[in-house]
Image 1: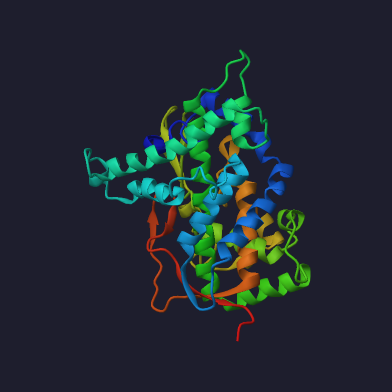
Image 2: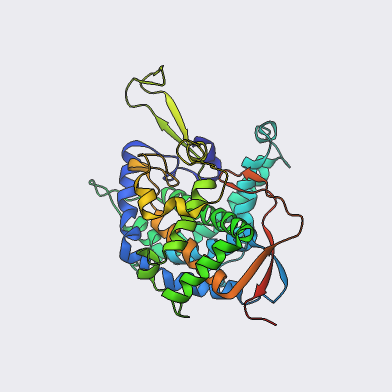
Length: 373
């Protein structure tokens, strides 16, 4: 993941060894069950705000809409930073998209340097994002507020020798979590509603479940985190199977071993691809078909170990996995409760890598308020 360093720096995605273990330990309290459950109120208020301007029959790019929503949620819930406040002097979602867009360009364009190149535009976006983050770090260091968000934990943490993270180290972790905390949610919601628009029978099952379990009320955190909305859980899992945002992962062999008749030496870099493994037909029959029932409890329990890894596995499993799952379900629930979404006529899905996968040309939909005449 070293090619992400020019934008993200040395955060959880790009570091290894003792520094990775130490950084992960520092951040874990912010991702405990209670902390994640407490973030639902922030998610709900931002979802309400994001939907407030929608009108019946309006055309919306659901991918871009979700990107902005998920980034505001990450900024508030993880770092206590209000994107609507006076300190937000730049369009953070736009800057992230410009920065990440570098990895969607052809390789020959990525290696170019100099004014006007994709690398230069990515660095310009980084500079704008850095100004916001470093200003917030300085403001927190001047104050006495000891919150429980990730930024507060990073600023207060120290190692066994009493050494604390410097501003650059804090910045790199913040950038990495902002990236991971919004980009994967954005792609998952877009791909989920692409498939739901093509499978109205699944939408009907989701709404029947909502009517039965929620009875017209917004869900609370326990409902969303305990699997009480079973059909929604299956839809989310099947979306992540077909379209795992973090579609490739990098590892290093800790010892020499043999795999499929090939000797892999100690220290060799070994990539795995969840996109490839999630589409193995002997594990997932007809893998290109959207079938949420693959993840009914009994069927999921029968999957081979390692067959389904949308968030990675082992010591480097995504630290924000449960946060992301809660966020996706919260957004999906409100979209289904309030609106019918139809794809723009003639739309054809194309995927792109940036560096997570997403719809190349967004997800253009038309929204119709449920119950509207």
